[in-house]
Length: 139
View 1 (cartoon, rainbow, N blue to C red):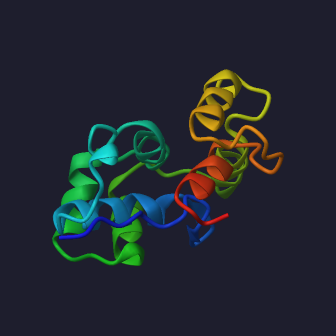
View 2 (cartoon, rainbow, N blue to C red):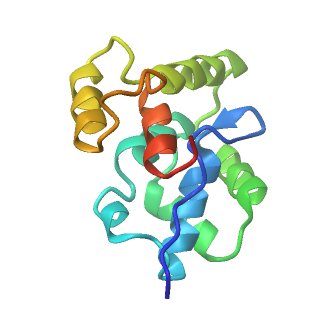
């Protein structure tokens, strides 16, 4: 079976970025199409951060997705079973995630990844989301 990249981390559903990517990675893993480079971080990193925001356990959410829930149903499940948060916290989180790696505690790690991937001459990769899209061939 061939491997595929998950969708962009910048995609959103119901005003929440990254959630479609988490669901896509779960489905690709279940279908044997997620590249090995992604296996170790399933449920960690940005996957973990969005689960923490929603107040749900990654494994429980992943099970909902594996049982056939589309992104909207999975998000509805997370909102019903997780923490209740005001809309402004989701807006803050979206802004935070869109800028991770830009002049923050992950800047050095992002610079290292950019150089390792041969993108050192590019000036359009300013954040980890930019990097992920470039690394996966979307920009």
